[in-house]
Structures are given as structure tokens and as C-alpha cells.
Length: 47
Image 1 (cartoon, rainbow, N blue to C red):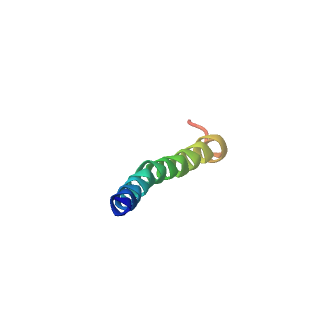
Image 2: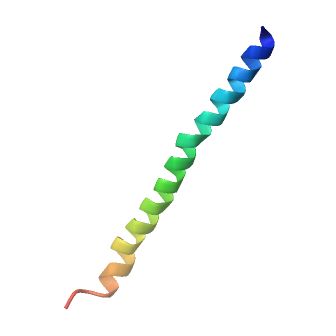
Image 3: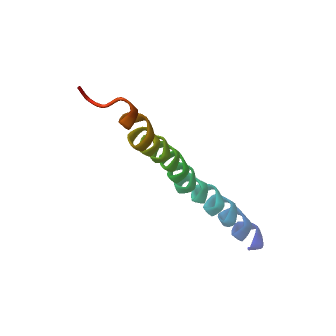
């Protein structure tokens, strides 16, 4: 029975990584977009 528990723990651990990876990618994209909006965009104002 403990063998099944170990298998279930591995499967749960694997799927826990999916939302963490998606959140990390979205966080990096948000950081880049915020940098462009706050730092780069004011250097080149619209005409």
C-alpha cells in the first residue's frame, strides 16, 4: 500500500510544478512589460 502512496505523491508533485511554472513565466512577462511601460516608453513620447 505504501508503494501506491509514493506513486500518488510523485504524480501530485509533478502537477504542482505546472501552475508554478506558468506563474513564473507570466511574472517575467509582466516584469518586462512594466519595465517597457515605465522606463522605455517615456523616453520616446508620442508625437
